[in-house]
Amino acid sequence: MKAKPLLLKSFLLTFFLSLAFLLLTLQPNIRKTTNPPPQNPVSGNGDLRIRPGYKSYEAYIQRQLDKTLNPKLRKIWTTRDWDRKIDVFAKFFEELKQKHLLANDSKALCIGARVGQEVAALRRVGVSDSVGIDLVPYPPLVVKGDFHNQPFENETFDFEFSNVFDHALYPSKFVGEIERTLRPGGVCVLHVALSRRADKYSANDLYSVRPLVEIFRASEMVDVRRVDGFGLDTEVVFRKRKKNQRS
Image 1 (cartoon, rainbow, N blue to C red):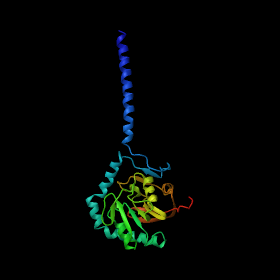
Image 2 (image 1 turned 180 degrees about the vertical axis):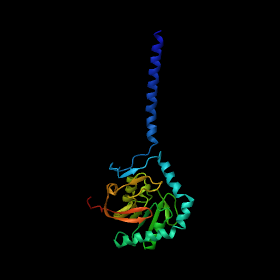
Image 3 (image 1 turned 60 degrees about the vertical axis):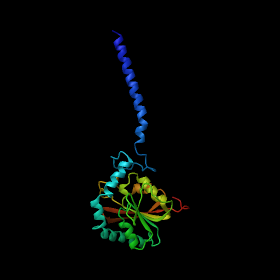
Image 4 (image 1 turned 30 degrees about the horizontal axis):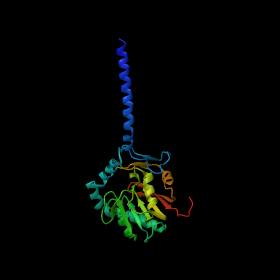
C-alpha cells in the first residue's frame, strides 16, 4: 500500500523538474523574438508613451507599409493634396529661412516623406539639394530608407525635417539617426501633435516637448511655436552642437 504514494511522489517530482527545465530552455528563444530596447531610452516622465501591440519589428514595419501603400491614400497624396500640401510646407520653410534656420545652400532631408511634398516645397523655396526618405521610394523626390536606420553617412545634412515622429517605435533611435547624419551646427525641425492624439498608425504619443529635449542629447532646442500642420500643432527646432561646444 505504501508503494503507490511513493510512486506518485516520484512522478510528481519528475514532472515538475521537467517542466522547470522546459521553461528555462524556452526563455532564451522568447527573448530573441522580442525587439531590442531603443538606444538612449527616455526616462519615465509619462510624456512620451510607446503604444503596445507590436510583436516584432517586422510587424511594426508592415503596419507602417499598410498606410504608405494604401492606394486610396496615395492617390489623394499625389492628386488632390499635392499642391495644397506643397503650398503649406513652402510657407513653413520660408519662415525658417527668415529665421536663418534654413538656407538655399543647405543640404536637406525630409524624413518619412511618402510621396515627397515636403521635398517639392523645399525645392520651390530654393533649397535644391534636398531629398526625402520613406519605406517606399517615390523617385525622384524620395529614396528608400528606414528612419530608425538612415541610409546616409555621418554628418551628411545641414537641415532635417520630419512630421512623422509619432510613427517612431523607437523615438531615441529615430533622434539618434538625425543627430548622426546632421552636420555640427545643423538644424532639425519636427512637427508634432501635443494637444491631440495622432492617427491609428502612430507608434507613440507625445504630451510635451520635455522628452524631445531629453533624447536630443547632442543638440539644443532653439525654438518652439504653435503651427497648423495637417493635424500637428507644434513645431520644435533643434540645432546640433558644434564639436567644441559644451552641452
